[in-house]
Image (cartoon, rainbow, N blue to C red; front, side):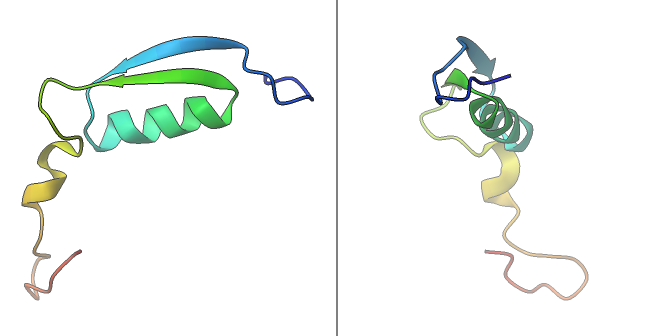
Length: 62
């Protein structure tokens, strides 16, 4: 929906900076919207920061 000149077409606020919120914000921004990403904590990422080991090999996921 973005214009051919790359102008932004509106703005949205995404509440929640977890994995889904970050992906939603990226998709909306790529669609031509200004995006405001809001999270209740001081850092985004949600529970993703706690998922540093993968099952079943216990390798580092980062």
